[in-house]
Length: 112
Image 1 (cartoon, rainbow, N blue to C red):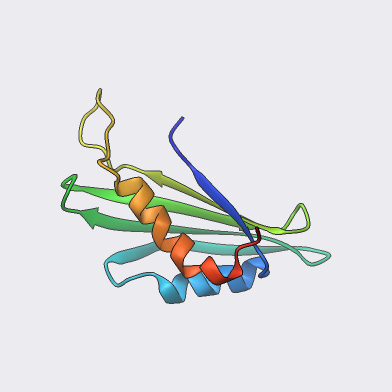
Image 2: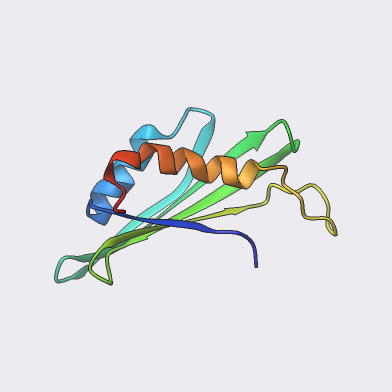
């Protein structure tokens, strides 16, 4: 299994997704989005982005899942597809770099 990153924020999932979409750079393409309201104020949403990295000479994807099913909004970021080889899966930091964009966008809302 690959690396993933997560953080908790003080925003509701719908607001968290809106902020991420507003803050993502023009170099990242939004491929997919959804938000499901499952009642009682609980929501789960997904964004999938793609971005080209010159360092790894490859497209990288970032799946972002936000939910408040445990009472606090949890943001999970799963980078994928940034490695060049089939055997040696090294992304040269592209996955962490992609996830750090989201962390920067939400920095003021992160719960310690």
